[in-house]
Length: 205
Image (cartoon, rainbow, N blue to C red; front, side):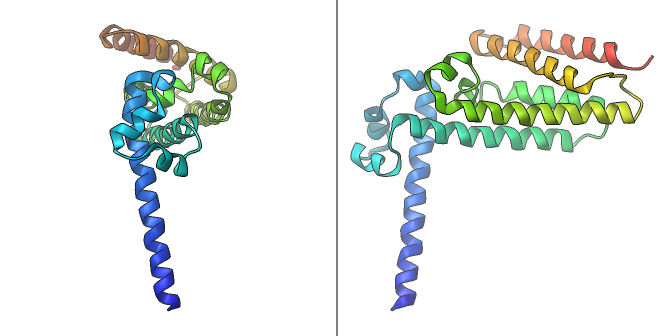
């Protein structure tokens, strides 16, 4: 009898997880298309063919769903960035791979990147912790690449902390262009130029 009860409980948990994932997947598409302000719980419920009251059983608000969506996209981005630098050896290629991967996922993960903007930070305070978490993640990776470059004698960086901070600021400028421009071609070309200038400025002659 106890075994049956445990089995029923496991099945119930799996069923709940599946429904929760379905809500997140559907909301991801809606938020990406309309943004959090214009998206509604009614729209999510209609798209998923689920009662709105049922959705509230899993998420207490639209903002709660958005946070789950952004958290998932943040995890995807972090994993992709770590994989990108893992698959190359030299510090130069690690920085190049990191920068390229970051830009590649910029539009694919629109919901997460929205949490990095000042507009979302001011409207939705719950994104602040996520924003700080990614900033620390990015800073530590870039700093480690620059320190490795110094140790291997290919970079000549006096203060890796300041350079990492500066690169993050530059990245944010390109984020805005990627999000607002209809085409990415010019931005991508400019970004390639930026990488070349960066290397020419810090590589030992």
